[in-house]
Amino acid sequence: MTTAESLFILVTIIGFLVFIFLKKVNWKGLGFKPNSFLKGWWLIVLFNIIIFCLVQFALIKKFISLPVWMLDKDPIIPLFAITFLQEILFRGVIINFFEKFGKRKALWISITIFVLFHLIAPYTWNSVGLIFAGLTLVAGYFWGWHFLKYRNIYMLGVSHFLVNLSFNFVFFELLS
Image 1 (tube, one colour):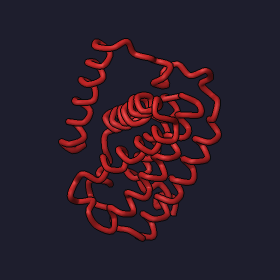
Image 2 (image 1 turned 120 degrees about the vertical axis):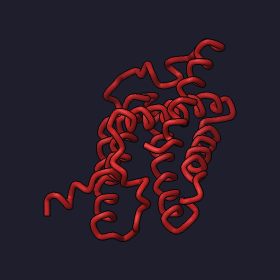
Image 3 (image 1 turned 90 degrees about the horizontal axis):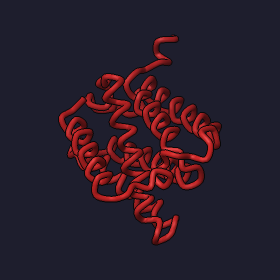
């Protein structure tokens, strides 16, 4: 876990606590009270299988050489924390806040901020960074769309966690 990731976790938790104390939180709007925990589950499973296979195939065939920080086998608990907090921030808070301007605008604002957030580090300013931006764009769009349709932050947190986990371990290589 990098210093930036640890800082993100700390700042996001503090910001969320301040948000809770300063304003009445709409837990349903943030996705914490979904109508059903299982609606849309098959879309999450399908998305994760596709992304997992693409990432694993790219790692095994060495189509792209990913930076060490992306393959550093983050500890499971901090990895889950950062992905869940990103979902709360980028899907829950940002989409919920900007929805008053329309769902499509809220979705694209969320996606744009999500992609830019993942590209702020100088080591992403190369061809790998552009591929990473593309993956982040696709994932951000899917998770944002899914959030607007089902309002289930839990499923998105698990999905994001599994996508990030697929970068940390080369599972298919173990099978060959």
